[in-house]
Image 1 (cartoon, rainbow, N blue to C red):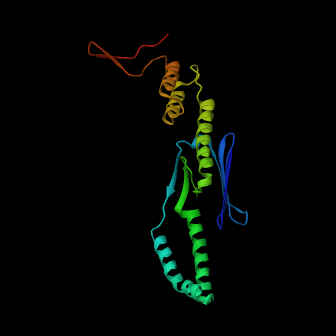
Image 2 (cartoon, helix red, strand yellow; image 1 turned 90 degrees about the horizontal axis):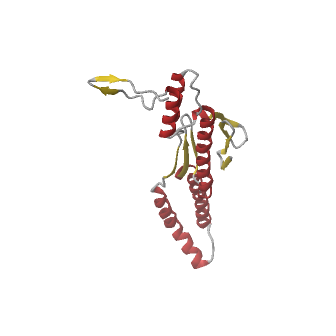
Amino acid sequence: MIFTQKQLFQGTTHIALRAESLYVCKRNPQGVATLETEVPYEEILPIKSGEHRHIPANQLLTGLLLVFLGYGPWREWLATGHAGFSLYSWWVILGVNALSIWLRFEQQWCTFRLQTAHLVITLAGRPWQRKQFRALVAELERRTKTYLRDEYGQVNPLGFIEPQLRRVAWLRELEVLSGPEAQALATRLTGRRSSDTLRSMGQELESPYLN
């Protein structure tokens, strides 16, 4: 899966889900890579994502100021039919402010945020890319958990038990394995249904082994 976003004056951000890793590349407007990294799926979880909106209140004041500045030139034009220098200047100011508002909307007002264990990616929060961004997050989490389950979710009772128990606990902590799945693997390794001690006649006994 590939996600690409171009931003005016900012360049291009390219995100790709590969077989064993997450690839991220950011290029400036000239096409030169300013950031390029590849994070293995072992270092992805936990994944957090969000959509943030922050519209500054001073934009309303700017709009009111533009209306105030344009009242006189527009009134003169409607009365005489002649567009003077003040009206042309007002249009220039309006255009500059419109461009500024668009850039701020693209880069500051609305953003998508994808955070992994060792990486934070911030993108422009374009409404028409919201569905694609959410699909990217869901697919990244699915692929990561599937990869970890396939690569690390198998145990061998004839091997070293302690490292495998730690690996099972790690997968459970990352929610790759459910509680019953982790317990079943731990039981297969140790032969015990639980590591909790039992008490009988005031003495602590080890949990029984399962045949």
